[in-house]
Image 1 (cartoon, rainbow, N blue to C red):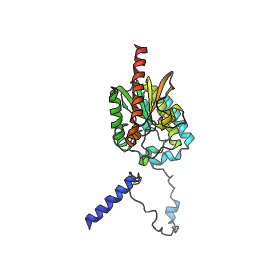
Image 2 (cartoon, rainbow, N blue to C red):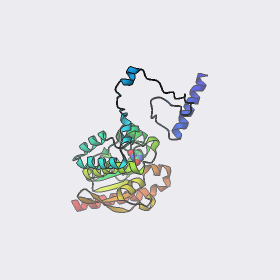
Image 3 (cartoon, helix red, strand yellow):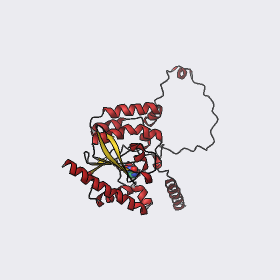
Image 4 (tube, protein in one colour):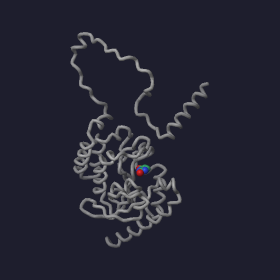
Amino acid sequence: MADERREALSALIEWYVEAGIDLAIDESPQDRFAPQPPVIAPVPPKAAAEAPRRPAVPATPLRALAMAPEEAVGAARHEAASAQTLDELKALMERFDGCSLKATANRLVFADGRPGSRVMLVGEAPGAEEDREGLPFVGRSGKLLDRMLAAIGLGRDDVYIANIIPWRPPGNRTPTPQESAICLPFITRQIALANPDILVCLGGPAAQTLLQQREGILKLRGQWFDYACGERVIRALATLHPAYLLRQPQQKRLAWRDLLALKTALGAVEDVAG
Ligand code: URA
């Protein structure tokens, strides 16, 4: 009986995970369909009625919800502009409470690789593994990304990697336009402080957000754009996201073309510099 129950429970959990429900928002389960007891207003004892009321203090995760989106975007812009180094930026993002994604994520996923690298890659948002480890692209798509970079002679230490959204959206859902707008000042500042020669946008959301494009990634990929990076204008390439390539492996040939274009561009930048 106990075994049957265990099996039924693990089947239920698997079913939840497949449906994208892979984290608990509350400490204990709540049956929202259970019949509610009638609400009878208690008659307060005199002393209790006269006791001063304590102001309700919202729990930390709810603080973000108290901020209007425009207020949060303004706060993010102000904070991001004040950071003079990547370390400062990371520290103030860790303190920032204006994005509600922070409430459900385990931690900030700031960056990996070597700051100051000539190539910076930007993805969409961390997944479950990235959220656990605190580093971008360490899951399945990260492993593929490593192989793609290795194919043109680049390792993690030759590039700098971040995401548009630094907190994992629950169940890997698509970030809302509001969440993207709140996080945009941070990634924009991160790119300016990392100061790469070439920016690579991995997938549609990164390309559309950073390059201000509306077309889908299959139209944008392989194209070069100008990107205003602080005081400089650098080159930016849009390419396919490794997670998409895992689902559509026949499209790897397109990604390979983009990687070769990146390699050629790196050579060209080197020739100009040297
Ligand atoms: N997908 C992304 O866009 N970023 C990550 O860090 C991991 C997966």
